[in-house]
Length: 351
Image 1 (cartoon, helix red, strand yellow):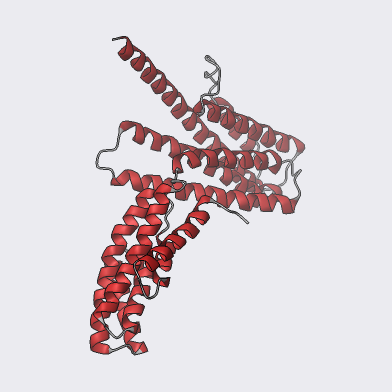
Image 2 (cartoon, rainbow, N blue to C red):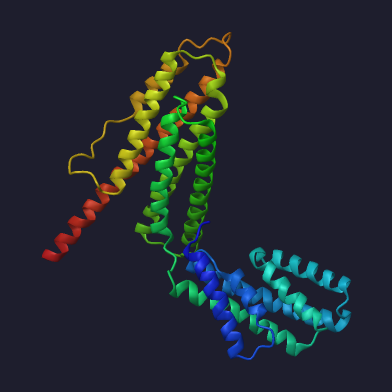
């Protein structure tokens, strides 16, 4: 069972919400606890965004529920109709993420048959829960998505390199390979979700700094290279072993995959600035990648079973290599820019 900071913070937010509800003498503090659970977000920006959005939709929901309770009472069909109306309005406002908690507010207010005192209490309970989650999120283990992203990149690459090294040789047990591959797929999806979070924050900045834009380019290329590597695994799993092959074919594919993995690892060391000075000048992969593709499809015979499948795998491997070349160029550019920045800083200090 995984235990992380977000799990701990959710429990702390619920506790704080309940304590504040007792402190403010709310009759039913459960609503604040529910709001705290909904409001715990993966980043400080999203917590703040959720807070603002939820205030809008909860206010709208409470008002509509108040009117609905006055006009239609609290009959089940009336509650259902009001919920439908609130969902439609929330969707129109582009506030789909807040619908769940807003409906909890609506149902609670409708249950009281439109009493405005209860509606106000319900709204304050929701506000208490959201504020509790926001306070805990920014004060206890504040989210550091960028640092976590780099750590996840390293972990995903470790898993990817193991699977690619054993994919063609078929050394790993099939059940273990499947489990590792499924785990890798989930890890890459989590990385893509985290990148989407960065992209969302970047779009909200009216004038993003150049360094932040440069960082986004790095993150995107790091993610793309892992995704291309996973696509190689998918192609091998679906097509490679269904084709007629020779030992030379297996050796060709296995050798080139090993070369790509080492190249990928070398590039990551560049980004982490772990290489000695002068060791950054790696040989271009382009020619080797082209030679591999030509050798893989050389002598293609449509009469042989599954020959087209080998071409599909070869194309996926070639695409992975091409993406690594792009990543290598980005690493070189970042390295040069960092060197220029350090040089400029030294000159500024001298002046």
